[in-house]
Length: 315
Image (cartoon, rainbow, N blue to C red; front, side):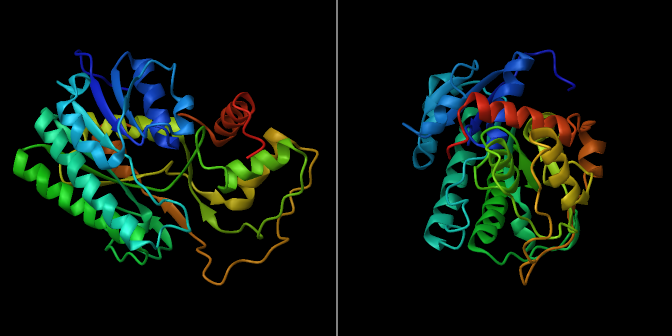
């Protein structure tokens, strides 16, 4: 990763999520300081404690307090990943999603008050609505879920705040990221867990074209955008590589437990199954020099090892 001579300081919300934990690891490896804001008493805090980050107990509703925190002063960049209600059962809860907009605004104002050079906002593919094919920066948005609508609103409002304070606004829209600290009910995590326990798995025919990105690659992309991304530009985050889902599933099987039959094709597609979804990362590469480094096979091995080390198989 290209770096500046000066030691960099990052403020990070959502630090215990799949991408946030990757950012903590990357910052520590680079010798940068990372102030990781975490929800007090969250059981997930244990996954980043001891890595070398400065842990700040701060609920999202209190994110404004970071502006007065002595550890956060002189920070270079603020990366806002924190977001409530990401599970499917909560994505249509308008009250929760609108709170997220409020917290994103507070985070952006705090970043400006601290004097950060850039505010990096983590948007989502959900802002496009039902999308088939390549996710590109210039696609029109048409969010269908309350989650997607809130992401779009928060992105627009933080952009306005950045313009007011003269701070670069880096807007990302993120596709499918997997790795340590990911939610246990995702396809990748649940499949690894079942195979490690020698349990049966069942899938659709898996012909849909998909794009998976390992968390540390996603973290590097966001850190490079914080440094080199252009203000008011939207950047799509993914591996830039796509293949049929059944190929990803077979790779997971080969890495984790090749003795178990995978059950590809045992369940039907849903009525509204998306068959093509992948990220166009040409602009990300052009503006930052980013290139994905971790293959899907290697990412699955690393994720599996983390799950075993952290006794995640019972979840």
